[in-house]
Each structure stands twice: as structure tokens, then as C-alpha cells.
Image 1: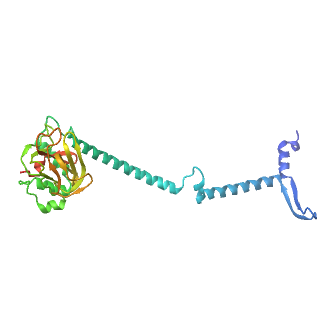
Image 2 (image 1 turned 45 degrees about the horizontal axis):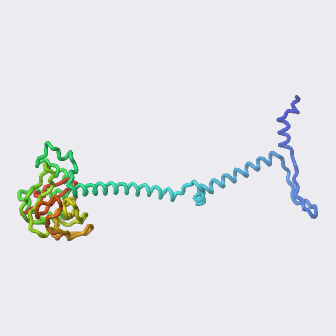
Image 3 (image 1 turned 180 degrees about the vertical axis):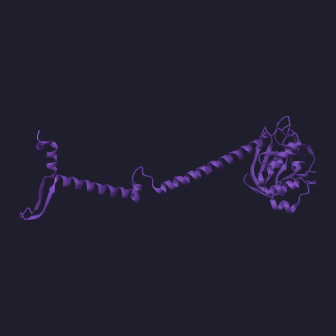
Length: 290
């Protein structure tokens, strides 16, 4: 085959062959425009036009609000809201976990269940162990340090009123009377039983919020109050309740009447419990019931 007749030469010749394109007036046959073209010119022109169109479309989608209307393309506003929702969800999970732990603690306080068996080791249930745990719980907090110094005083019932008011934790006795049964960890009696006359007023030991105020079969009318700095007070076997759940109470305010209600009651008395950060405390260390 001769060099002139090669297929590649024929293709190149076709691509480079020149053509004239005329634009003629159909009525007068007058020539309006004319162009000298080749197949190669047309192909190059089409590539340039398609490239310019593609670039324009890309920049329009990438840098204008139109991109938000394209399915599957996330806008910056949506991404921002997604990030905010992640933080909100994380915060809600933390709040849920704290509330769950708190409500679980209230439930265990209400039924008298031991909250931490490892803390109350059956072989080492000594009074000084509870004191040590109490000191660990309130260590490092300025307000609680004041309370710790008050408790460590020789006369632990004569609170320094100014210091107590500064901590907003001025504790009052719920009622005065002889103690028939004291705080005993070995017997899982996390309270003191105060012998009282029928319907004697029961008072709140400090400012707080009522978190439980209902009847229970085992302990009769029960009221639980949450105070500052992790303290919670529990009053059981009442004959009636003066406050409802969610109400705010002041220190010394009447919240119930002494009774003999519930299956576990053996006489007219107040079953009083004091808890700190989920751990039962001996009320005698804080209050004078005589």
C-alpha cells in the first residue's frame, strides 16, 4: 500500500478539508454570511464550548445557594445544625444519665436498700469507717469544708450560725424526743427512730425541694426533701403530709405529722434518714434530738 493511500492520511485529510458555509436570504437569495470551516475546527469548537459550560455549571453549583436544591448535596446550614444537634444530643445523654442515677438513688433511699455494698463491708462495719467516708465525700469543697469543721467541733450541735448561713445549710432538728433505735449499718438501719406523741409536727431540717410525698405500704406516709450540697432527708411513718412533690420548703417549716403508719411501724415515732451524695449518714452527727 502506498503512503498516499494509508487510512490515517485519509482521516487527516477529511478532518482538515475546508468547507464553506453560507447563510443566504431565502427570499432574495442574497448572501448574508459565510464561514470557512473544517471538521477539525468544528470538533475543537465543540470541546471548548462543552468545557466552558461544564466549568460554569461546576462553579455555579459549588459557590452559589443553588447547590442546596440539588438532592444529596448538604448545605453549610444543614451541616451546622447537624453539629449543633450532636452537641445537644450529647448533653441530653449526660442529663439523662445524671437523672437516672439520681432517681435510682431516691428509689433505693425510699426502700432502704444499700447503695454501695463495697462501702459497707460486712467485716469492717465500724463507726470510724463511716466518718472516713464522710470526710472523703466533702473534701475539697469550700462550703463543705466549713460544714466539716462544724461537725468536728467538740460541741457538734452548737453550729456557728454565720458559717452555716454562708453555706445555706443550717440544719434544724425535725423533732425532739428520745431515740428508740439508732443508726446501725450492720442491721441496715440507716436512720434514727424518734419516739413522738401522736400527730406531733415534723419539720424540715433545711431549705429544700420536696422530691417525694406519697403513701407506701411498708413505711406509711413518706416525704423526701432534697437540700443543697448533695444532702437529702427522709421522713417515714407519718400520719399525714403537709407538702406535695415539687414544693419548696424552708428550714423549720412543718412538712408532716408524726404517725404510726406502714407495716414496719411499731409505734408512734419518726423514722428519720439523712443521706449525702447517695450515702447514708448518722443523723446524730449533725442534729440534736434531745
